[in-house]
Amino acid sequence: MSVTRSRIVGCGAYLPERRVTNHELAGRLDTSDEWIRTRTGIGQRHIAAEGEKTSDLATAASRDALTNAGMSPDDIDLIVLATATPDLTFPASATQVQANLGIAHGCAFDVHAVCTGFIYALAVADNFVRVGQSRGALVVGAETFSRILDWNDRGTCVLFGDGGGAVVLTPGEGEGDSGDRGILSTHLHADGRQRDMLYVDGGPSTTQLAGHLRMEGRDVFRHAVVNLAEAVDEALGANGLEGRNVDWLVPHQANRRIIDAIARKLELPPEKVVMTIDRHANTSAASIPLALSEAVHDGKIRRNQLVLLEAMGGGFTWGSAMVRW
Ligand code: UT7
Image 1 (cartoon, protein in one colour):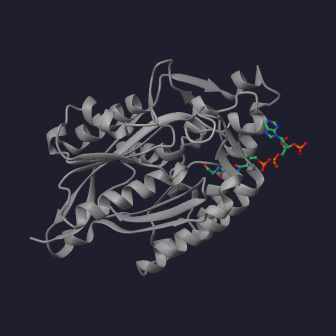
Image 2 (image 1 turned 30 degrees about the horizontal axis):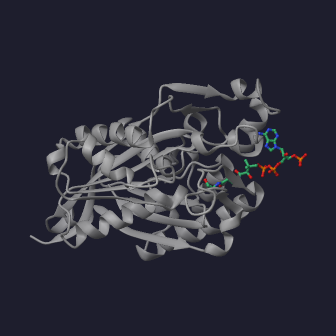
Image 3 (image 1 turned 90 degrees about the horizontal axis):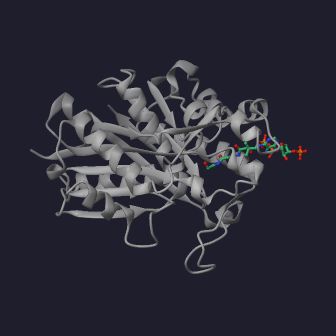
């Protein structure tokens, strides 16, 4: 049998225990619950405990995804971890996840495309699976952005949270109807001319320190709406679809107003948009797999439905994926 597509056969999630509300932040910063909610849709975020690393979040989400898929770590021969907040400069945090899961075969590496990281990682793993180089792939997005935030900068620190999400991909073998399910397309973009609008002011080759996140929020917002509209058009066009054909939009959760703008463009009612930003805030590469996992576990996303994923992040990077569930 030939491999026609890779399929998402399991989803998992992990959020650190500690929740920090807008009110708590307003107690130590010149901000308010009202400002954060109306400008972003965020109500709270989860923050990793001291000593809790990105690989810990990624491992917990991966275990959850494997359980959901009914698979064991032995079935995994590829781990692609999307993160901008690795445990260490090297080795890749994916190798720590591999070790935590007790896997000693196959390959494991990180992909770094900030908030678009999960779409990039999914595209990479999809290609591995479709050419027959992987029979079981874990695609993970995990971040501890709390470690690179300037907690005195109200323009950025209120926006982000920590978390991890994962999916398991396997080859979708078969003919006829079953061959139509799986990842239908992925589209990736980058434009490094805009790298100064959203970046971290540190790193091993410059300051030797981890640095802090810096963002021109208003400019990023403007580019996000334009780039994401382009990315969803591309996904629809490549598959001969229209917005109304989409059953679920699972967007990167950066700002509720950005998500609403894309949903309006697709003419999708709010009931068809998976929204987690109110509880998770922006978890960068983790936000899409966290939202996917929630929607699957809640029984919202069902077999044969069309699911559209989109994201935009530092670089700039942006992209989309169309999936027949
Ligand atoms: O995930 C990667 C991609 N990232 C994004 O997509 C983020 C995109 N950007 C955004 O989501 C929004 O631009 C923000 C939420 C960051 C900011 O919202 P905005 O409506 O664009 O506000 P603004 O930056 O234009 O700031 C408006 C005002 C300013 O005060 P003045 O200059 O009008 O007096 C800010 O100083 O709001 C002030 N402000 C705050 N006030 C209370 C900024 N942050 C806060 C805050 N609390 N936390």
